[in-house]
Amino acid sequence: MARTKDFDENEVLKKAVCLFWDKGYNGTSMQDLVDGLGISRSSLYDTFGDKHQLYLKALDSYRQGYGSQLCALTSSAPSSRQAIRDLLDLVVNDLLNDEQRKGCFMVNAGIELASHDKQVNQLVCDTENQLEQAFLKVIRQGQENGQIANDKDPLALTRFLNNTVKGLQVSARSTTERSYFEQIVEMAMMVL
Image: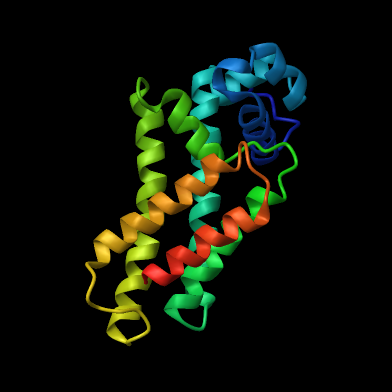
């Protein structure tokens, strides 16, 4: 008879995201995971597999939460321009409120592992695609209703904004000056 788990898998995944985000994949040991997750090593292996499988599940959990946040933000804004502004402001505020200056979990994964780990690369690409699709949808709507100039290719604008977000996320590792980020956001909005 299978033993029932005495922990919430989603809560453990949230803790795993925090641990990997703080230390990176390579900097997080199995002992760090056992200590930080509050579950035994055998429970960790039985439920999540090895460290790599847990990392992938943590990244996927983060990606799903990110996707939900994007959908909510873009669907609730009163205009296309406001949706883009709200998204950029959300990124900046999240980054500046992070006292540890960890940057973005997904961007960090991309920098640390995506070039040599196909599974991590796929999750990073899927997340970037989520953001790209959200921007593209909003830009096309804005061009159709006249809120965004339609003399620019919507995909090029989308990729510019996507790259702007990644740049903000990387810059937050070393810069905490709000005006620095606000100038970038203002310039991005002027491009529209």
